[in-house]
Image (tube, rainbow, N blue to C red; front, side, top):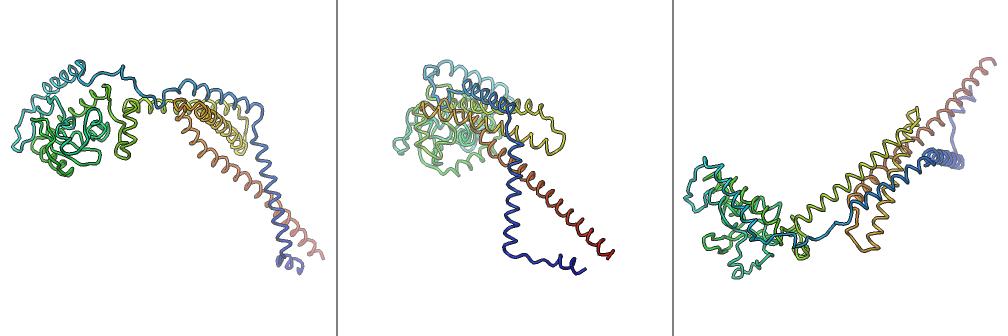
Length: 384
């Protein structure tokens, strides 16, 4: 019994601890190498990889070339084109006639009625007369870039309120009262006052709000077709200089929408290719155990990850060498970044599980051998 008690009372010295650690590191390295061998791409996997790269490169060729491209003024209309005027007039009369049952309550506080709002020929944030005296710098096409009413997103709030309250709000959020009768910017008012006046007018006649929203939408729609277009949303708030440069170089709201659609297509088709490659490669999975299935999925993820990285890298190099940003596959690059932040952690997770499982099995085997040894020793002692 003394020998057994002595066994459980082991004190390891530093050298023995170091030897155990070295043995652990050696075992772990061997298992990691085993994982690498089992998830290494073979000839069949490499065929899938090259095919995936070819598909991604072909997609890039077909879906790049317009990113950041400015519009051609020859394809746009003048702001006072008869075609635009007729379209506006037709829609105004149609809206008014469809809502005749609303009546036409006159304001006791100087606000325009819903019919006057609908039938207006000019919105207040298009008024530039009086700008020079107030030092606002509004003039020509630049006024669209300096007024929030012309912002394709913020305009739905500020432009609508400006129409209801006969005011103009600039990109620095300062506001001014506009006299619609004389078409002149008269004096500054607080933007908070614009909201208050808007609320007051709507409380007086609720139909002014939908009428103003209609007028705002109609105005934005007509402006986007013109030679000066509409500014790219929100940018002028954060960088007036950048917004001005974009506008000056004829890159407007419609250009931005076109590019967003292009990037969306690039990303969508990149994802579709990944799905197709992943599904077809998955059909060749002959694994039966959970471990085999997971290890095969690692190979599939590697194919998708490597193909996306190679295709995106080649595209970036091409755009850089040719100095042509229009060829940049931005949508595909976003998908590649997504794969990097999802596939690498997934592969590392499976690797960690594999290593820990193998180490656990190895130590469990050693424990079982030790238990057998103790049991055998006990039996021998009993006979003695």
